[in-house]
Length: 267
Image (tube, rainbow, N blue to C red; front, side, top):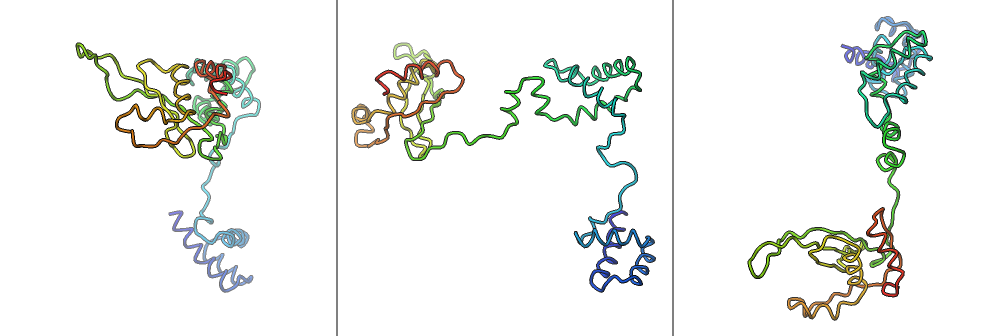
């Protein structure tokens, strides 16, 4: 119904835009649409900016969505109660927040709001603010802050990335064929070219030793390593370079490796 009314008005306004909108034509069009001339002029101004029926849709009666009708003092009390009672690590329910707000209103001599009013304000909370109050500013930044540019290599072999993964095989004993475990593969990957610069394979869980051995394999030439592999004797693996920078995450194992990297083996 409202869309049809907007389409009928758009046809009249389009005719006015194309053939002129003098006083007589405006009076005749206003009479045809059942509008005042002032209202028709307002619709014409909107239509000239955006010539589509959607720009002149009749507005529904009542307040627009999101409008708040509570007293400012009551709004301030609700906001304070949300910070003190709701935005906690324990994550209390909205019904508990509503009870706290009602109790504060009775003490302050204010009319208590309905449960729906409290529910609407909780749903309008910024998730970043909620996480900052409940889990801390660092968690909030990690979850909602824009991602920075990070490290970007300027050339191949300029930046290495190290990762661990369990191999999709199970090693068994040569004597009784009983399973020993799944080996861990530590890879050193060149970020620019995605080439494998080095690796380390071990039955031990990832540690600073496995990372150090993988880095040693990445920074040293492979001429002495390839002949030990029968199926790679004729291949070439010219991917090696000394590290210029070693960055770590918040990991105690890798942190210890960075402290050990000042030795002559990596210099």
